[in-house]
Image (cartoon, rainbow, N blue to C red; front, side):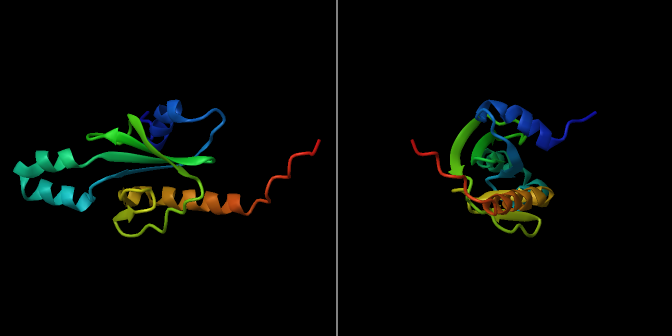
Length: 142
């Protein structure tokens, strides 16, 4: 049975997580708009190698504590290779639309395919649900 891409990413991202940290959403994307890749494949094949060398796959791994931006390389989105950055969990990613939506909330544009729009919505919904919780009680005084 084939493993789902989200499950594969969570499994392979385990070394980058803190103990007890829970993944809320996995948002794969790429640095180059998918329409450019499509146009090159359809029309101008000799430039394919140059174009693909410019594109990188990224993973926004949204946890209950932070957002990790991971690099997955040039050829596959399923295997994170290194951490590019860490952002606070309070960032609202935005409302995805169209076939290739560009998320600009992560420091660099991340082009997210429609297949993963529900993950963006889930990440923002988890943030809203978390912000509705009351603040933790103050520590007991000595």
